Amino acid sequence: MEQSELQAIEGRLTALLAGWAGASVAFGTALAVGGRRSGRGQLARFGLQTLAWGAVDGVIAGAGALSRRGRGELTEDQVNRKARNLRLLLAANAAADVVYIAAGTAIWLRGRTGETTLRMGAGDGLAILVQGGFLLVLDAVHAAEIGGASWQELSLRD
Image 1 (tube, rainbow, N blue to C red):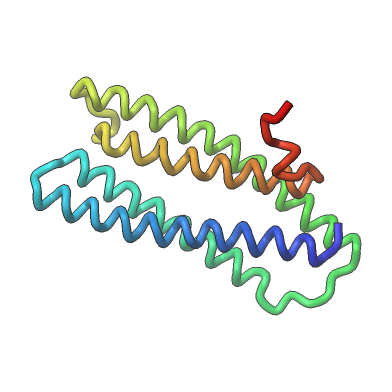
Image 2: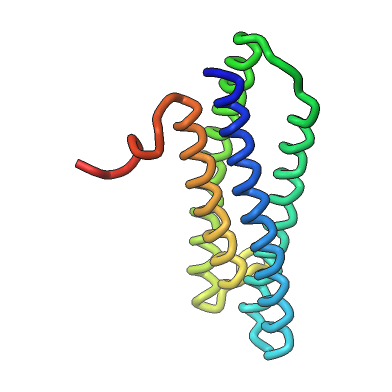
């Protein structure tokens, strides 16, 4: 892999995560406020959970951007090591995303029956499910791209 390819992948990953973070913070804030004002508790919970995930995603995107700032020219071995480490990180994150999706689904389903899990209701669970789903796609696609598979190769075409 060339350094320019790695930089393009890292830049795209950071930009997508930062955009998702900003949208999550804005959307989550609006839903939290609107849910509270209208007395719709689960809408407010969905909003707060979305806002929190967006804030964390924003910190991660910012840390990624800062870690690349001022990076000079890398040797081929350094590029390959960074690419391999990023791929492993993204694969581990994708595994965690599957857990988020499962946990979010369980919390959402329990919350729909009126049960709560860890003081979380259906709104929390649905927000975790949505966030985990987005992150799974983001992480898996970029891990595969670093591994040499393109997005087109991952599609379900015959």
